[in-house]
Length: 315
Image (tube, rainbow, N blue to C red; front, side, top):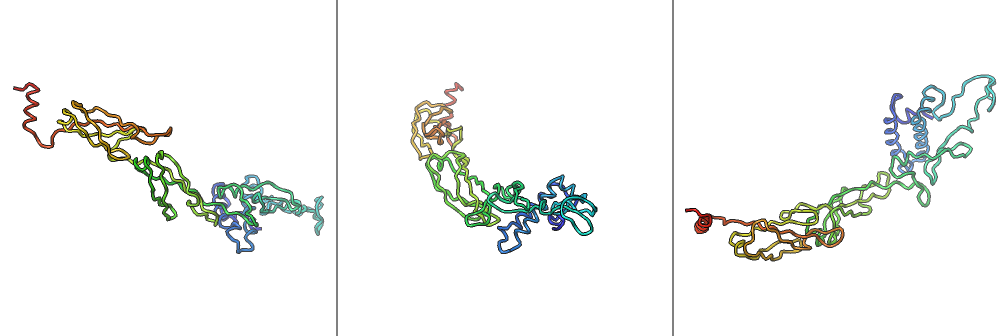
């Protein structure tokens, strides 16, 4: 087996982060599910995981660097005559029985696992889950590995107050280039999250695509100012109408309505239109608050000025 530093393509002075990055990169490249046409894919992947097993363990890495173990993690054979135990080699050397210490990797329902030559389990190998983000790799029906799904995508969808209140159909542009229409139900709350199954990122290893999650966000409105679940609207009322009384046309989320302005209405007076605001989490809608904004004529009016001087008591 090759030197584990060569297998991972890192220098002997590489730190833990460099080693882990190299392993992640190569594991995606050499994974058996990505190389189904290569009969040696599993051997290459086993070599990679064995090399990472040594270099990611401080104790094993130190033993390898000191020459105490080889690239397979076996104690190195030293030619000491008379050493007892194990098999007898030519020249009087008695070494270790390689069958009792050799570690291999098998691929089963619990993912990649180390085990001794005799078949004893050597513990789960969880780094594959760290790489792909989905825990241990599972065997798909019919054999082989089930490739991990692609990543999920988060999308924020701006909607107007009217669309959230009465409902609408909105087009969503997905990162994968697709366009889909989503239905905004009447009374949709801000922050509502919808799942578009299979519309997320593609799996780099050929697995199912991830999901796209669409979160509703209210857009700013050109006429209404939001105050929690209530809305505020400033209604311009000419001076003469504020004095004499009138009806003004007021926009709402479901269409314009007529609002009665009594005579002698001062500027700043507020009228409440119940249920004409934004959707409420408890059901129903907030209110629309209409504040009167008294306006003067667009051009100077001599008669109005004379009247105002008289009321002020000017000579």
